[in-house]
Length: 229
Image (cartoon, rainbow, N blue to C red; front, side, top):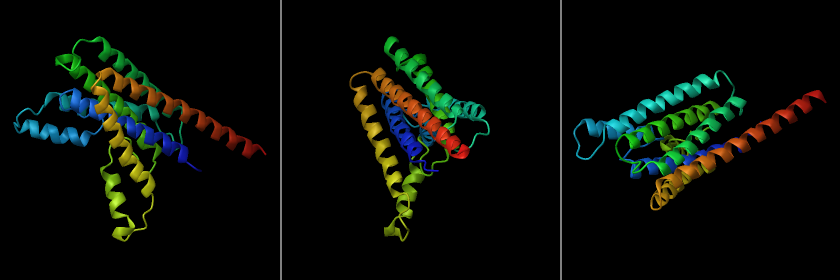
């Protein structure tokens, strides 16, 4: 079955991850809320005593990301690779959670400081963990929505320049470009206010969830009609 629509939806989520990581790193004391590889490296440097490198928030972000991923996996159960109503549930909850965080950041004075900032990065990490779990279950090759390191490796090592066949180079390049553009957009919104970027992320995930759910229903209906004819 053609899954190009699902691929497009996950690419949008990749863009939104670029935004949340830029917002977390630049606006909330060097914390990645989507890219846990970055947090592990930052945590290692912080534990080694590197100056001005945080420990608590990256550690909590890592823990809460895993909690979110575990809860997401529990909700998803043993669904297949196709978009499922449980996929819609996960992405819908992530969108709702991001919308709530946008309101939280807009209302709390100095949300990047102290406990308020730690709550923000921890909750956002849990949401990104759940999103990553749902994206992983869909098994769209080279698109995880949270990291692009393996995607870049595939883009280079499978390229015709490296003697490969260049398979899936378009989606790989798009994933890299979109997370880059997301980071650019996230950094740009910080020049105005932190809540704006999170609100845009919530809107992007909401649109993705609605479109993905409607497309999945359309495909199931078409399949049922084909079977009955």
